[in-house]
Image (tube, rainbow, N blue to C red):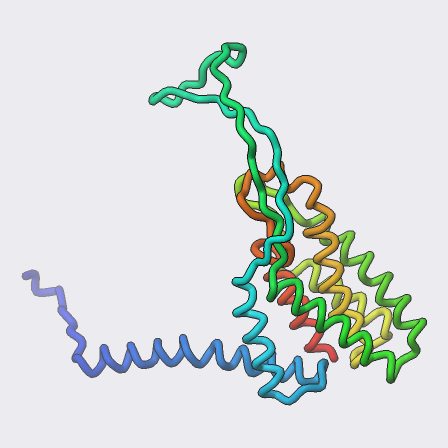
Length: 241
């Protein structure tokens, strides 16, 4: 062994301490995140911290649940190819026709629960705010967020619908602050409702006519591809309340 080389060895206690630190980071960081989000939802929704945190956890767990509502069928033409990957002449009678079926589903944690929360918030907000003005502001904010979500969402063949994580939520946040002329409950309600319904309308529902072209087995409203944007939009709106 060359004289200028040094070999360092770690004791078992050092390795155990390192594993404990990594384990604490893996456990504590998500808990801190849930705690902060739960506190933000407490300010917006008016629930206790425990109930608000449980609601956030429920949304995350229910994001795994997709409820099928209908199916889209589209006739396709598949070109067989040989082992070498060579496609035959497109005009030869070797084309194989088939029916591609795409299931349209509604995500429980990304669409149903946030939509129910948004309607409930809007109903409770009318007790302390002017109803007609609030409804008009919310409607305009929803249209703006829906337009931004529609433009920035990319339907990707083989993958599904992909929505940017932060752009729709930040748009809803700005709408809430501008229409409410500052931070507070009004801004939070406008931002929350416009984030939920704007993203669902612009990113999902507006792209459903092309769902059959995506060549995926399922397109979920509020599910994969858009859940993150909806969840972040809800968090941002809760922070400014």
